[in-house]
Length: 174
Image (cartoon, rainbow, N blue to C red; front, side, top):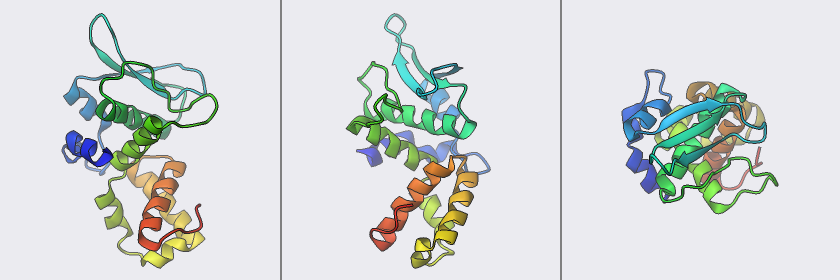
């Protein structure tokens, strides 16, 4: 399901020179408006279809760091592509910390949109797969991916851990 949605975005069209996915271009192409507003600290953002106008707006917490905002915007695009008929508010951070399946799908979509598998594997090609289990190399790569893709260290580490498990089987779960 997530792979189908990623194909729908044709995200290769929205790459900037620095290889970061241009999320704003995706939104413009799809007619989605993005607004950065002050939200509660626990709330990262949400997507809403306004009932009177049909206008789709993604609201992003302006108080969060830029890299967090990028992930949130990609996450909300995940809701747009994966759950198009839902007009309710989606929240990345649920009050009790639990994530339902739609939130998990939107997170996976965001991770794959921001850090595409093919680009990630290209960056990792210089390392032997078993080196990904080394803590120092993992930390170095996490920082490199965070910088390259404009995402938080946490998002980069999670994605790197997923790729590492695909290559090596279950590892240390950083």
